[in-house]
Image 1: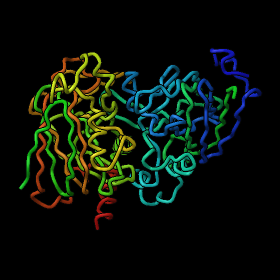
Image 2 (image 1 turned 90 degrees about the vertical axis):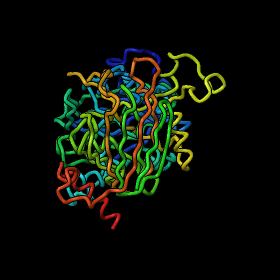
Image 3 (image 1 turned 120 degrees about the horizontal axis):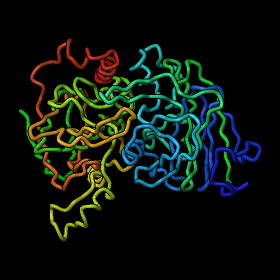
Image 4 (image 1 turned 135 degrees about the vertical axis):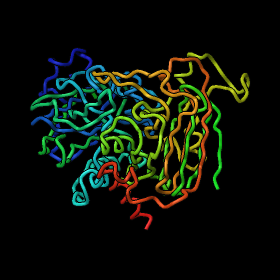
Length: 217
Length: 231
């Protein structure tokens, strides 16, 4: 089935026709190539599961997702349906084509062993973290330390207040909620299914997510 | 014994600064903006604003926060500012943001030609063997982007006046990379103020009750991590 068959995705996408169907276990990751026009859905199977995500132009990884360019150009902090995910060269990499969660964070960054130590103390030094997953799954595509920009946290709730406050809050997501991207060019999605145990971003219990993709080639 | 350098409006500059220095930035006019990137002593470890903000529960940069790197080290502490908000969410401008001012070139405008912040930042990174790949989110020193109840964003005109300052204390050897282009959300005319940079050696050891160290446990742990590396 072609992604171009219907442009109103929310009810038309059937898991049985997906050309990509992958469950990412808790704390694991994935590198998914999505061709231009392809749709990739990320399903929060159990609810409140942060999915840290980076996007790259599949043909030029230096042209990568830029959180701050995306936020500034849409004049709003949170991502939701209709948000254009822009690159560091202001190219549109993808658009959020459907969203049953409501809003997603892109200013809270990804967890790393080092930032866990800063936030939670030395005892977290050897806990698994998103940055390792990004580097592990990015390496075959030539995505190393310098190519890791600031990411999206799908399903994560980081309220930003008018007085300049920012904190991690309980998620707005729930079992079965999903967000869907339509690729505006050939892109690579680098995903870390967040293993964080020290704050409510995963409901204190990391769980699997499902990736469903529809494209014709 | 320090030095001072004035970056003209609309220009870019970079300089190494050793650990244990103060870097005082002074706005040369209203609505000045300094897009600032920091790179750590190994010239790989970059200022990471998402990590800086979430560790210190803030959506902007202000004293006495500690500016943290990708690898969890303190790069610099914000020791003083006349302003309570320096933008840390909206990045730097591109050539597309200059289109409304019309075409500009060296041939036509000589050294007053209009160049985007991104162009200047990449040029400065390249000078040090770095590249576009090393671009990260910048601090927009002197700029406030107001956040409304729904987290919509708007440029706060008049936030910065001539003479407003921000002072950093370097916690390790740094590369400072900066551009003085107007913030891309600034709707005003093209009249970018200069920014004065004054670098001085700290005149005394940092006291144990330093406000940045005491700010939050997270701030102290970042400073401790850097001190371990410097040991």
